[in-house]
Length: 347
Ligand SMILES: NC(=O)N[C@@H](CC(=O)O)C(=O)O
Ligand SMILES: [Zn+2]
Ligand SMILES: [Zn+2]
Image 1 (cartoon, helix red, strand yellow):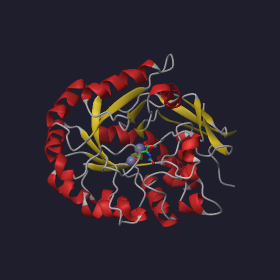
Image 2 (image 1 turned 60 degrees about the horizontal axis):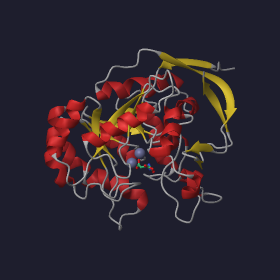
Image 3 (image 1 turned 120 degrees about the vertical axis):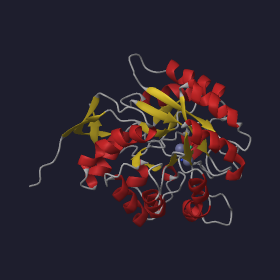
């Protein structure tokens, strides 16, 4: 009989890609995020988006105001890049001490990306200052050309857009967010040490069959869209390989139940209720539980040039059932694995 681990103590994790939204939703999303995360890199795709230091700092204070008592959860902020971002804004962002990254959304690529960048050349002067000041570039890596198949949009972005940026800004730190393909794994592996990637837990656990076979399941619909199983396997290999370029970023993205379960449902999957618990399952399935801690808790802060958290959390093998819905700003969301059992819990 093989010995099965039943407890696992790891350095406190950080989530390097998280949507907390704002308004009434914040208290619910922050409650989940602050259960055990040390830090989270908070995405700026609000309505209106957090395009300036002032807006991002205002958002920071709204988040910390609803942090549960005693929580040490620390939000790290990002700016939303547009065609009109002023390079001087980057210096203000850096000086704030709270903003560590800027987010490139190709205009129209995903949820709340309408004010995004229409041509990466439009932000070259901004990238110049980011490179100089050490602000990271986070990339939603998909093209928006309507003629490109949705399953190919990440691959084509890596072929046509990202190589120029990597070449023209050789010391800019770049995180390719929520990668979904073997092409992205290869791109990141072959790039210099200034290029890394986040991998979500839903892209490790699921492929497009989970979304489309036996009925269409809108809660699996997110962007970049789930790909075929061979890509899923490449992501699992990368996440569990011990390569420091791949680390945790859940892309947990809450949407109201009625906005997902509709004729034109929006993109985003919610995993913040069980993020590390689900990563533990994915790593255990791959026989790589020993690689979990570095992925959730070491490589992210290392890449961002931040200290690793100094305390720990403990996972226990205690199956629990995910509620069918969770509260979201007086409304409801349907989390990933709703009504199903998760085998790991965080003590
Ligand atoms: N991933 C998603 O499908 N949705 C995200 C946006 C994003 O991260 O692309 C959201 O904000 O809902
Ligand atoms: Zn995205
Ligand atoms: Zn996201």
